[in-house]
Length: 155
Image: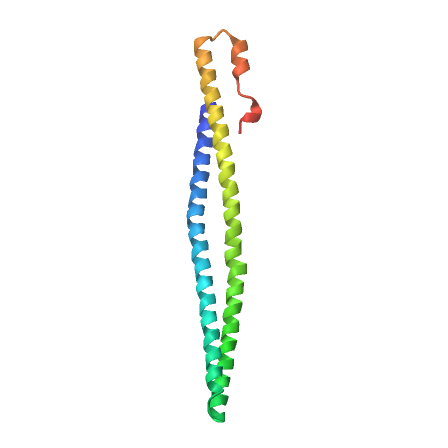
């Protein structure tokens, strides 16, 4: 009975370890790709700002009619970059930061799993010692009882 319970716990722990490893792998990749996307979008916004400045500089040297058209174009293009800036800020706040926070949670779960594995291995070792003692000295109950794992060590 105890052996089967231990095997069930081992299977559950292995499943959790697999799930945590899977999340670490994929969410890490997602976080890196989203961060790269945000950086590239921000660079694109910066290049567009340079373009707007250059259009305004060129407009200053042209005739009044062309100047007006270029300045209107530059203003509209600058408005588009305002939307791109909002996109960058929203992606950072709503996607990248939560993914980073989730990474911290996954690390804590990994530490919890390590502690679980350590406790499980310690329990398995004690049960093995207990079985050996029972086989060697079946009549020495006081030795067997002193080696029995405490209930708070069990899951």
